[in-house]
Amino acid sequence: MAGDTPTPLTPSILEDQDAVRRLLVLADLQAALADAGIQAVLARNHRLVLRYSQAPLDPSGLTNPALHIFGPAGKRVATTDGITYRLDDGQEFPVTDPAALAAHIRVS
Image (cartoon, rainbow, N blue to C red):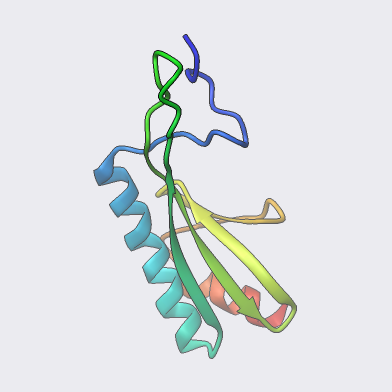
């Protein structure tokens, strides 16, 4: 069935409660970054499918949110699966210690 396998151009749609949980986890990191003097902007991502001529239609909905971090070394992006924070370079950190990740970003 079309749309069953997400690609980078068609990210996976999250259940509403999972999207909200990830937003809250990233908000914890955003607060830790603010405490470290680092600005970050939290962005919700939403995939909207407007094709009316193809059936079945791919679903529209919330996808993985991202935290855009403006640190000393430049812009970084962090995402989460609810268990780990994942930076755009592939590094992963546990969500249980957002202050440790903030400290890492501050010195890197």
